[in-house]
Length: 138
Image (cartoon, rainbow, N blue to C red; front, side, top):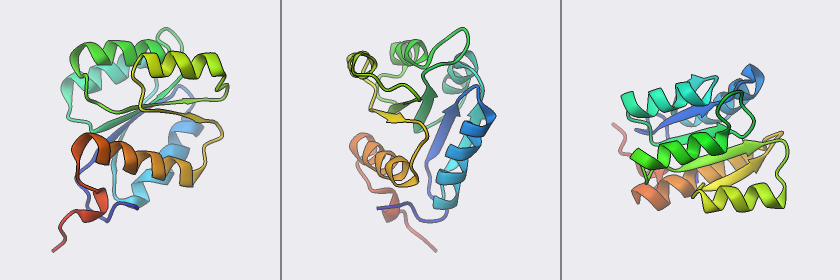
């Protein structure tokens, strides 16, 4: 299950490491998703307030606001936005905390293209109901 070109979904990628942001972007953009890249939790909150995004990747370890803290703040005003935490240290405790905060999933770094795409499609279908690949084409 992957999206077709021209899909309507927009993905926010928040990570203080430009290499990680670019890696996620390079996985999802060729599948037709639009991306918005930011380098902090504060910027992610601004984007979620100002723009329509359909899914968010949040790096767990960012300065000032962690991905988990950002997720908890996002939940205060957008309870349905699927948020996926990305971390190099996916411990059992962190995963429990993430699910308590209602993260959709936790993906370990380095990310796998197949895991990222599978998780994105499943999250979008769960929240919005229609598979991204079913977007009408000309």
